[in-house]
Image (cartoon, rainbow, N blue to C red):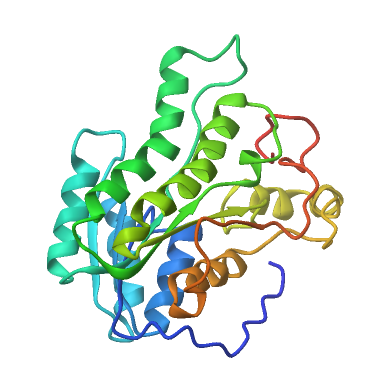
Amino acid sequence: MEENIVPAVTYGLRDRTFLITGGSRGLGFAVARLLTTEGAAVALCGRDSDRLARAAAELSENGARVITGAVDVLAQDELEEFTDRAGRELGGLDGLVANVGGKRGGGLLESTRQDWQETWELNGGHAVRAVRAGLPHLRSGGSVVLVSSISGWKPRFPAQYGAAKSAEIYLAGALCQELAPRRIRVNTVSPGSILLPGKSWDRLRLRDPETYAAYAGRNPSGRLLNAEEVARVIAFLLSPASGAVNGAHIPVDGGQPQAGLGPTPGTEFA
């Protein structure tokens, strides 16, 4: 894995409370780990109960308070019920990270109407529902971060995923105005390609290091991102230090020139 040098930074999040969707692994877990290291309490949801239990056990090792819930964001009311429960058990929320995302189907002719609907629900739809359900619990001065993607502003096949991610960027810009009277900020972070343990880029790195290096080298930084680099930007947006940042779209991609670094659009490495 690429070297990750973590600077000595404190975000002023001790005793604060946050909800992270898709928080049991990958980027969501990296955010949760950083927040709990700062002394915050977190509520995490994901589909896999066992994975959630492992995540909670690891985060609790240093005394952090962790609430979990098995949630399928495509299922009716599961996300809303968990968000409401988390807000009540934590005594309110200082921030919310809408991190769940994904896509269904392939190209325009190969994808179905259901593929497009589910892709929207996994991304923009779930973000809307999480913010709406969290609103009664979000404290004045709270912060919402929507995790979009480089695909949301640098178009690439398949269209349904990029369109849904683009909607999240617009959503943050609109909601920041609507929620401003409540003193709640809403911003978007758009990561580029991330090297995650066990995922497709990591499998390629282990199986074919030369090919992996060639693709990763297409990024001006000469490598892929790691989840902690994106998590630090999200933590900043959740912190009081970013109090004047509202409605912003912040790419965290190392200057990545296109949404996919793989050989062709739509490959597992894109």
